[in-house]
Image (tube, rainbow, N blue to C red; front, side):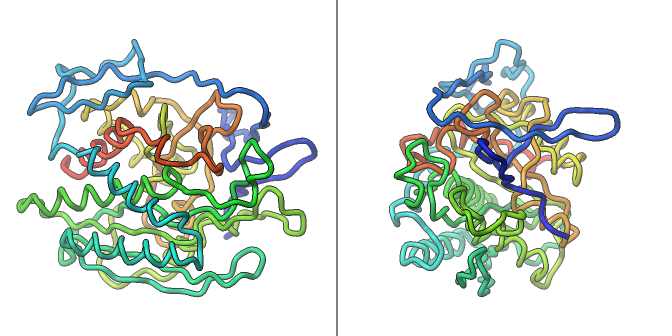
Length: 374
């Protein structure tokens, strides 16, 4: 099976990899977003009335989020597990960015690989590197490494947490066309997901009673998809998520995780995470479980009870090829004219200046809630 189209070209229309889905009879209608590169970003975001910070309830409040309709209060939240440390996750995000853009076949990519492997080992994981020579859309041979870190490797009951760790080589959605062939720092679109996983691994190592197995997988070669400025190649969708495609067809030996959660762009300012359409098709029960966990953790306003768009992302091949029902936690900005993924997506502005600790906290605490709730 081929991946759903992540970009589709038409005259006068800038592509985006997310399409709206609206109920129509028994199916969904898919609409591409038109982008106005000179328009100002408009965000209509709800934000959290946070749970009070006590030993029993954790705050997920965001400085840019305020939703008077939320009921996430200390009285209603029922948090489970350790408190996620957003400062720690922020530092792991910054550490990856200090290597520079982690584009395929680069020295920064290789240095960051070693760092990620070292951190997971430090946090008690058994690490396997899944190496492969993958072919980019233009024939470039990509030296790819999926990093597979197993916590409690002997446990049969397992959950998959995953994110991609490579950087996009081209800022092809930047408002300034002179930046379109520059690499993306990928603080949010790459580093944030890995950082959240690292912090979760650290917390699990400190909890001697945690008995479940967790497979942390850092996918490589996710963001080598056909750039928007390319005219010689048609984007059929399969140029994206190359590392996840390889992983899903070459699962390592051992017990298969019961389900998976993909973390993509989980540190952006003003982010909210709608129920993603492909996740709803593949694993609606897991979506419901995660969104309920967000409410229980006091982070529900970051996870609106609404459907966003359908995204071609790493979770698609994992669902299609591996048999692991996997969902995508990915932001949706319905009123951002730059991109439905937010104003920094595939631009030179995807930097640490636009990483929000509150967003990292909300996502990290939600995943902790999932892990500690039976």
